[in-house]
Image (cartoon, rainbow, N blue to C red; front, side):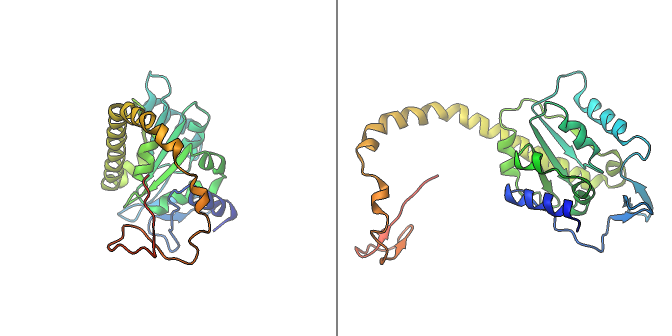
Length: 241
């Protein structure tokens, strides 16, 4: 593991994201004589993850095809980031949220090892979800809540060589988008009601004592949440989120 990879993995962990845990020997990746990662196909061939001559131009073409004639969206999904060239192109656009879906933990290593992404990760502009489990979809859904259009940039080599894995990644993205739409709908229907209830309860809340006054008052007594039995010697704590 090089220092760049370690720094990026630490940033992912600090923001509650998924840090790929892939370790050699690798199943999907091999290195060419120059040290660049190549993809091992299901039939044993090795193919490049990006253009050797013009990776930036290739990435710009993929992003342009995903955006079409529409202006840049507030969020974009990348299914398979390859060498990371696509992410560099997106980082230079006004896109506020970049969701990366990697079908396998190994596939995140080339771009996480190549350069630092910590600024994008720590600002939560870049979020990584890794297959096959794609943990973190709830957090990702909150990141795209209220976004009307999420263009998709899919890695063409991965789509050709591993179509089933790419389909599973697309299904994970679809779950994120459905959850985001449901969250936005619920917020629209219940936010005003919650605000009115808060205002109605505010006088009672202001009359209550300061919870800080309980600090240290029960240091020698056990506390339980959701108690089964009532015991005056115990302190019961109830909370909601």
